[in-house]
Length: 103
Image 1 (tube, helix red, strand yellow):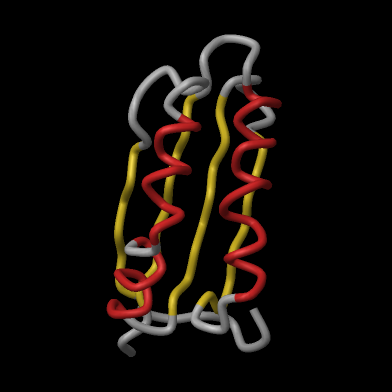
Image 2 (cartoon, rainbow, N blue to C red):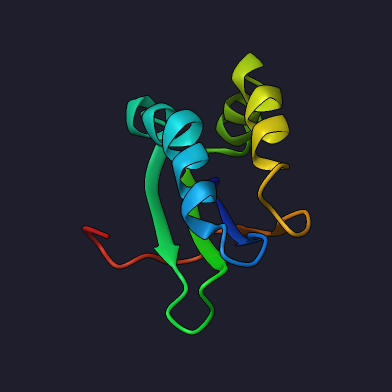
């Protein structure tokens, strides 16, 4: 399989996770929804830590991942989100090995 996955963990500044979510909704959500190369996208609010967001993304290929992140909008998103995060995101790229059908 040539599909590429990303596990991402974002830490907002204390008490600013809702602001992080709003920035994500402004920039990333509409582009992920419109992107056919995003085969799966899960945006999760950590139940144990009120400042953490976890994201899982599955792209159809490594090229699709690079293309998505190379959009002109991405630099603007990064500038705006930098105002509310405590640190850069933890990003764990992975190659898809197996998926449950229909997932």
